[in-house]
Structures are given as structure tokens and as C-alpha cells.
Image 1 (tube, rainbow, N blue to C red):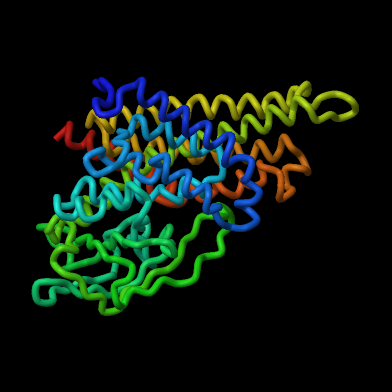
Image 2: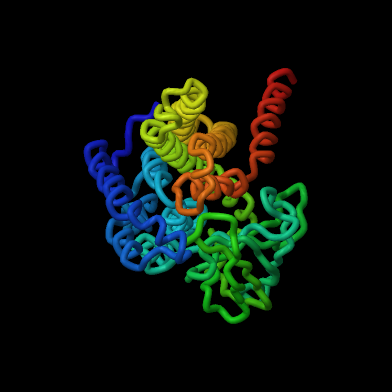
Amino acid sequence: MYTGNPDVPDDVFTDVLSQINDFVRTRVMPRELEIMTTDAIPADLREQAAGMGLFGYAIPQAWGGLGLDLVQDVEVAMALGYTSLSLRSMFGTNNGIAGQVLVGFGTVEQQARWLPALASGAVVASFALTEPGAGSNPTGLRTSARPDGEGWIIDGGKQFVTNATEAGLFVVFARVRPPSESGTGIAVFLVPSNTPGVEVGAKDAKMGQEGSRTANVTFTQVRVGPEALVGGDGEVGYKAAMTSLARGRIHIAGVAVGAAQRALDESVAYAATATQGGTPIGDFQLVQAMIADQQTGVLAGRALAREAARLYVTGEDRRIAPSAAKLFCTEMAGQAADLAVQVHGGSGYIREVPVERIYRDVRLLRLYEGTSEIQRLIVGGNLVRAEKRRRS
């Protein structure tokens, strides 16, 4: 049973969430067009976010963060999802898939070295897992790390690395030996971006989420010391990746709900004011039906994301529920955005109209941290295997 976060009581969290919502509505939303056209988050917004503790809201208080748990994280994700998704992406890797590797698997020395800097925003961490042939399933990765004295030499390349162009630290997954019955042979290393042999490519030109940046990263004869091996364990990589991704999937579900809510709100506002033949289009039943479908999806998605977060925090389900939540909520957000464009008609296809941006932004949610297809395999496969075990 979830009894709340003792480090951040409900009354404190209510105040934190109120401040985040105010920041989103009064500071960020008025500048969404600026973010989109310049393909950058304004420096003053970054400074405000850092001052509010957003770079470390999910990092434990012992290391300088706000210490929010995943149940609270989902509420924050829904608030941040309401505006340009690139804002959340700016500090998402520090709180999420990169930072949580350190929180869950780092040694005390590694945590002390990096987590305070991540929490303050002084350092941006990037999660370097995906590479050609090894995306949603890390078992196929080819980046290697071989022992060299007391340290390691890393060779390989990663792609679609979020925040790579701004990163001060790469959390790099590499194969230290072939997989066997005793383990996957995947380790994870902490590689400062200024380490010789680390090369960051040009930022990718993406469909949407202007203001967030991804790039390829190449590691050529990158030499790191023994302190770079996360947890001091050459077998921790696969578990660290799967654990961080499962947590991250619930967060992304929350982001999707926030984006869908914004698409719904834009649809309702437009339907109530735009007219056709002198009649508000919201009076037409087919428009009402589209809005009803959006509302139903948002309500269902919000409930599922919250339940998946609760199950994760209590330890009841850290495998099926995260994937189910991400699958449903991200697909739902795509449908809500599509309906929003349809409600707006031709104006929904114009670049400076919010629903056009939302339509492009949410498309990525169904791809990263495990595609919808991977989530279906996880949910279905785990249910079937559990039933087989029950019958054996």
C-alpha cells in the first residue's frame, strides 16, 4: 500500500506542484513559439528551472535533489507535458534514465561525485544506450569495453543521445564480454564528455520537439579508470538499463497525458469560439464526438499512469504496468493530437497553431524508451510466461 513520500509530504508536494504549474502556464507557454522557431530553450527559462530544483526533482535530498518519488513524479510529468516537450527534455535525463542509473546502482563515491551536480543543473547527464542494431533491446549492443590495467578502454558509437550536445557526463552502456548463462556481459560506465576520444556529432534535425537536442556520440579508444564502472560491477548494465527504462516509461506516460490534456483544451477552446455558418462548431455533434473521445482518453490515461506509478513505488509491479501505461498513454496522446488537428480543420495544419506543434511533438513518445511494439511484447510475453509458471 502506498502511504506517501516521507521525504516530501503531501502539503509540501502540493506547493511544489503549484509552483511548477505556475511556471509552465505563465513563463513557458507564452514563449512556446519562440522555443519552436529558435529551436532552443531560452537561457533565462533554464536558469529559472534550475533555481526551482527541476534538474533534480527526482534525485534524493541527500544529494541535493527534491526527493520526489515516482507517484509525485507522474504529477510533475503531467504538468510539464502541458507545454513544449523540449522543456522537460532539458532536465529529463538528469532526473530519469541517466540520473536513476546513479541513484539505483552507483557506489556512494559515484553518487557523491555526480548527483549533486546533476541536481543543481551544473552537469547534464546523457543516457548513451541506443545504437544501430540495439535500440529498444540492449542485448544487441556492440559498443565494447575491455580491461586495461585497472581501468577500461571503450570503443563504439551511440545514436539519438538526448542532450548529447550539452552533456557533461555520458552514462555509457558497453559489452565487456559475450553473453552467457551467467549474465548478459553488459556494464555501464560514467564517462565525462571531455574525456579524450569522445566525439559528439551535430545535432539531429528532428520532426518535432524543437528546443531539445539529440546527436550521435562516438567513443574511440576512450580510456576510463576503475571509478567509471557503475557499481564496480561488470554485470550491472542490463539490469540498470531495464530498471531505469521501466521507471522512465511511467514518467513518459505522465508526459503523454499532459500533452493530451493540452490538445483537448485547445480543441474545446477552438470549438467554442470558431464558427461555421454562424454556428459555433462545438454545437455540431461530430465535433462533440471527437472532443468526447479526447476526454475519455485523457481520463483513462491519467488513471493508468497514476496506478502504474503506485504499483512501481510499492514494488507490486515494475514490469508489466510500466509498459502498459506507456503503451496506452502515448498511443492515446497521438490520437488526441490527431483529433485536435481535425477539430481545428485547416488552421490545425498551420505551423504557429499549438495543436500542429503538439501533433509533431507527441509522435516521438511512441518511439523512445521502448517503442509501442516492444511494450506489447513485454506485456503479452510476461503474462503468458507467468501463466506457464503457474501451471508448471
